[in-house]
Length: 108
Ligand SMILES: [Cu+2]
Image (cartoon, protein in one colour):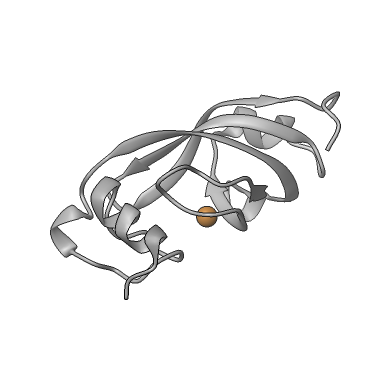
């Protein structure tokens, strides 16, 4: 019996490093963009990354806390506990956020 989320992952995306078991190597190069909403848990400047507690991403992964690469502008603007929206970009085997918008006024 396969969990529903595993089946959805196969249909829509394929393997997700750190989130699911790799299912098919040939899908690793598929790129995609997904809207992401979450909260900054920590700023990780040594890896140009933010540790983010993100909400479920339909067809991709459930809610969890994980690191995403961001550009220098987003890194400098980020503050702990800030709410944010962004585009999650899956490019090959890298995961990064683009169009990061911080919304500190939005209640958690
Ligand atoms: Cu995740």
